[in-house]
Image 1 (cartoon, helix red, strand yellow):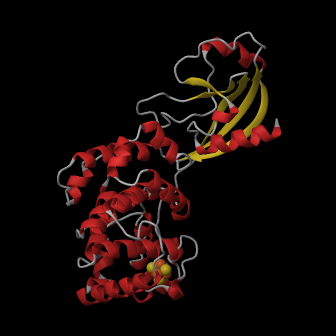
Image 2: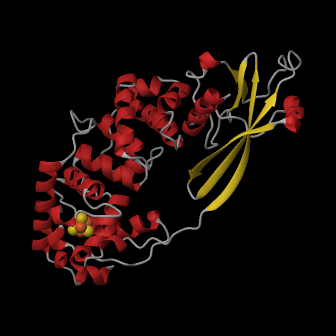
Length: 353
Ligand code: SF4
């Protein structure tokens, strides 16, 4: 990386200055109107940064708007039961973000003074180097550079960096010193948002709009006409997994399961059960295939085969279900928190059975 910087026009401090000016002028003119940018606050910045991790802006906007109405500040969020917080997050996925945000709100609500340095923020629940840099640069003007997937794409193209990275996190770590070198320390929050905005709206993964890009004069990748080849992330092999799911209805509703508490990925989130409780195990024998649904989580492609089993009328409906299982009536389906795919599939199957 060091050699690439040395041979690049941006090794010259004057060029770096004009690069920052061009990028910020473009941002001032072209930034998207986003709800967390109007009347910004520390709370709005934190919530938006948590939601935006691994999730597109267009998906986040309606969630964010509902969220700040329901939980307008840190103390409202701190006082909300976890169940309510997870329900408001339903469909955004990666639910540990919601749990951490709730824990973070409790900490912030107990502070007398809000720390402004990125290291202090990094010790808080769910905050890594990216969120710490984003929050402290945007809210407190701290000169800390963000380095997320968008920034990695822009930087590797600007410098024609073809170093192979084993994954996105490694690329972000390696490129962070370069991101710091380019940062505009007079307007760090705006600069960070500008370079991420450039990655999101101009320097697209597949077809970057180089002719309209404010960084084209500094971009080695664009000059060579092969910008798309950066960053050089080593493709991970995906694996496949089949998971059985059971669709069982009683007069009390549809059987759902949620890992009750703790750190399980889907703790508190309901899905069709993968295993039947001992009391209902016999039903699996005669279960009939109803549908096969697909979803991808990380590097795993899941095929979830849904089997329908019939309750013997009246016989086992009074069985006390073990922890985590519950019957959910049609009218209560909207009040429990379901994983996004399972809510969709349940709706689809309801229409077909
Ligand atoms: Fe990306 Fe093209 Fe801009 Fe370079 S010139 S940063 S490749 S959009």
